Structure formats: structure tokens, C-alpha cells
Image (tube, rainbow, N blue to C red; front, side):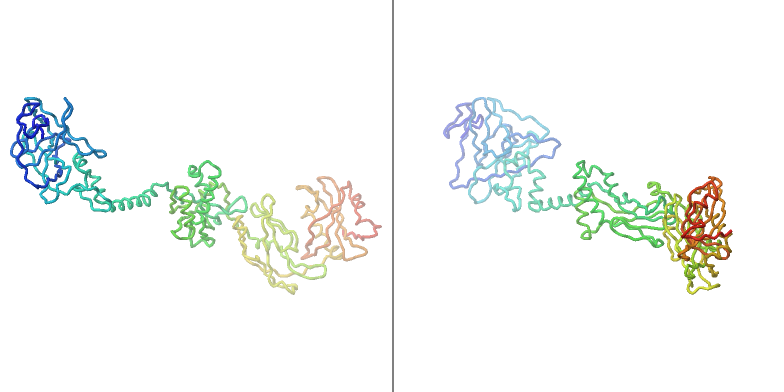
Length: 607
């Protein structure tokens, strides 16, 4: 038992406090076997703008609350015992065993002798501790705690809102959370209630963990991939032109559109690192992944277009001012190459994006620095017809066929040449003399020929090689050649057509290997030469004079040729010249073919 004024321990029979002299009020008799009351907390904070400042108030019945501790009302449970403190220390109410993070209890101020302190009026609500017995038949619960009631102002009646509840029980995961039962009393009192976030977490329980898991999955599946750098593959579509020379032909431009891994690496160097080994590994991974990306270009007018799927597609027959619309398609999930593609994205930490782009052929040409040439029409058939270059041929055994006379001409910067009537393929050379290709000429109805037979002349096939890569478009229509029977070369025909032989040499001064362009060439005596032991072997030897270089020499032509319409058609590939001499007589003396006493050759002068 304690003094109500100073809290000093007193005996049950004392009338006055031995310390402060205050009268002692006797306790009313307690009924036998009455259950000990059970206490519960209720928290009722006032809705104010400032944080509450707790102050200990005694529970009153019908009187206004006072700052000091009043005597208990009749039939009320005893107040908690207050232990005496050392002198000059403030007495504290009985404190329950302190739990972790427990908020300290409000301090109870002792009364000064003969003076009752009044509470300082604050705009915030102050709190008092009260106890309410639980109206049940259960056994009394130990450790009853005073309940908080809200006091408005200093002289208003407190609102007794405490309700009987179940005693505190620790919350176990999986069970339904009840704030009144599962909240520690000292924590509830100290914090002014359960934090809102804790309430939500406890209310949701296991369901809240599942919800959190779903949210994290959404973040990793949607939000985090959206935060990865995006690489639009359509920005890295490049053009490779097909070319077999230093030019491409307008209207026949061909090549392929493809994804360029090198440009991706150059645009994003940080993704591949500085370590050569890592860079090589990631670059190889990227190359493999791009083969599962489809690059599509479709044009119904482009017969050469072939969609190859694996990072490139071909095209053809473009003009230099043309454009192409390209579609880049990523592999579908579960489709071909998807796993490699996805692993490449993960390795680089990026997200590839497909899409469309438009490629300008003129821009790509400018980047590649290739030369574009216009198409040139070459009417080779018309040239052969107008220059009477198709002729009947007779060989040494008197067999007759059709061939093309030797010639050389130019179409643009390109040279077309036929070097022997035995050949039916006209060769083509570029401006530097480099061989490009041959144009094959075909003859129809060329069997069992006789004078007047009709032979059709045309191109052997529709070869577009020269047109596609050099801009030489073969044109012209087939024509008909009427056979004129040739005259076989022998001593008699040679003597009769000696002027034709002389004209042929003057038209082909290149037969002299020492001849230079613009040299003045003269033809002197011409001889028909045969072997004494084999008369089937025959040659033509002429004495020529190079007036520009001032030398004389002999020129030997193979005995391969014939006469057609009074023209000499030579079937050999070259001529052979003798030593350079100062006179024609010296040139004759220097030739083994023209010696009058030769054991091997017989020479007959034709002019």
C-alpha cells in the first residue's frame, strides 16, 4: 500500500503518511474468490495537426481529471505498485519486461509538498492510463497494463473507449492477423498504433508475398527488358554490288542487301569491350545470331530477286536512281535460330528491334565509289552484214564451210576482233586491252553447201553477260548469207589474184612485227613458195619496204587462205619477217626461201 500523495510505502493500519503527513484512506474490503481483472489497451489518438504529447493522467469517475494521482474509486481494482526511487528521483509506474525496440514509458512527476502541479495546456492531446477489468469468468491475467484514453484540454472528462479484448498472442505466419490480439501492448502504446505498412503486410500475410513475387516477375519480364538499349537492325542494312569490273551498268545494277555486323560493332563499341578475346567472341556470336534474321525485299518486276532469308537478300536490274523497301524480321519464339538470337541479346545486354527501311541506290553507289556506265547497244550482226565479213571457206582438202573474215573494230571504248576465219567467236577487249568475253556467232543451214546456198547468221544464245557487267547490249537481227564458192589458194590462183594479196598486206601492216603506227609500208616482189619434197606445203613471201624506218625485209604468210569474190582471205594467225636489210636485193639474198639453188624450196615470182 502506498501514500496517494507522495507514493511512500505505508502499512495497512497507518492513518497518516510518515513522510509527507498526508492522511491514509483505508481500502474497502475485497470480496472473496473474486477473479482478478484482465486489462486491455485501447488507443484513441486525437485528429490534430501536431504529434501527441503523452502525459500520465489518473482515471476519474465523475470529476475533471487532475494532474496528480487520485485515489481509487470504490470497488475499483488496485493501482499498479510503484517502487520507491532514490531521493530526488521521480517515481515510475511498474514497468513490464522490456521487449526489443520498446518505447520508454511516460515519466510520472512527483508532487511537491503542499503543492499540486497543474498540467501545462498543450494544443495536442494528452493521454492517461486507465484499467478496465474484463467481464469474463476466466482466470485473471497477470501483467495488466493501463489503457490509454484521450483527454481533451486540461479539465475535460476522458472518453472511456476501452473494450475488453483477448490477451496478447504473438503472430504466427499463416494465421489471420488480429491487431487487438497479435500486437504487443507496449509497442502499440508507444507507436500510437500499428504502422500502416505493417498492417497491410500482416493483413495480406502469405498472399502479400505472392503478390510481391508477381510484381517482381513483371518488373524483370517487362520493365527491365524495356530499359535495355534497343538496337534497330534496319539501320544497319547495307548494299553490296555485284561487279566484275570497275563499273556497274545503269538499269542492270545487281547485288544484295544485308545486315552488316561490322557496322553494329562500330556503332556500339562499349557492348563488345576492349579485350580482344571478348570482342572476338561477342562479334562471332553476333554474326551467328544475324543469320536467323530475315531481310526481305520483294519486287515483281525483278526477275533476279531471291529472298535468301539469312541476313541478306539479292536484287537485280536496278537503275541508279532507284529505291528499295527492306523489311527486317526477327526470329519467332521457338523458331529457327531463336535460341541463338536470344542468347546473343542476353550476352550483349541489348534488345534487337526489327522494322522497315528504304535504301537509296544512288546513296549506296556514292558510298561504294563505283562507276556507273550507261548501256551501249552493239549491233554486231549489222556490222558483219554491211561489211561482208561472212564468207564461205574452203580448206586444203576442198571441204567448204561458212566462217567470218578477220576484222577489228570498236564499239565505244571496247574492241571487237576476229583473228581467224576458222573462229566463229568474236572476242571483246576493254580499253586497256584486257579480255572480257567472246560473242559466239551461229550459222544455220550450213551443211552440203554449194554456190547460192542460203545460210542464216545470228547470235548463238541470248548471252547477257556483257550487258549485265559492262553495259554492252548486243542488238541486231539475224540475216541471210548467200554462198559464193571460194577459190582454193595455189600457184595459179595466187598469180591471178596477186593484187588481192598485195592489198591484204597493206591493210594489215601489223603482220610486220617491227611496224609502228603511222609507218609508211610498201610492198615489192611477191613469191609463191612450195616444198620440193612435199608440194602440199606452200607459202607466200613478199619483200616489203618500211620507208619510215628505212629497212627492207621479207614477210612470210602461211599458205592458208583462199580467194572469195576476188578478195584474198588469209587463214593464218601471223606473219614472219626476215632480217632488216638496206636494199630489196639484200633482203632476197637473206631469205632461205628465195635462193635459186635451194635444195628444199622452189620459189615462183608472182608480179
